[in-house]
Image (cartoon, rainbow, N blue to C red):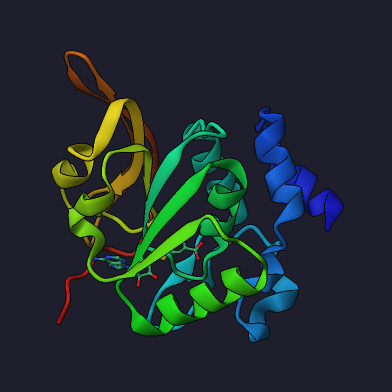
Length: 202
Ligand code: SAH
């Protein structure tokens, strides 16, 4: 596992990010049928049609977020809770939103049993962020928005960073990095990606 991990984390320099990846065991978050593939560098299925991204992409997104020990972070799409655990290792407080009751309950149970106490969980539609807890220093979405996520960007502190996949449901999405600056929001295209598209409450 260690050599797999080293290979997947090639290019990641931040020692705090590397330490978080060594500490959080991805196998704790992967469905039992896929435990042996936990560190394979491809997405794995979760329940409710969701997928957990390949570890190298999770690492890239986590590094781009440039988390500080004092950061308040909003995450959209809790899924298995794996990314949430990494955020909780690196930031002061994590606010995570998941629309699927099943995944929400499972992730909350896993993260609580692993001892994380700096995570707040919300079951609901994260497309509007979490206005009652805003502003956030960092925002990460692991579900794709079909257009610039304005409601999330409104919840960033100044100098805040938001990472989100953006693009059509059936086409190429781009991983976007937004930064809130005194003269507005800057944006940068990072890499083409394929994420589950955001859904709304039935
Ligand atoms: N980062 C997760 C994987 C997330 S997959 C992990 O590490 O396991 C994307 C997740 O977004 C799915 O769990 C899906 O149910 C959730 N999702 C989809 N639409 C959503 C919405 N509107 N609000 C919150 N979560 C949503």
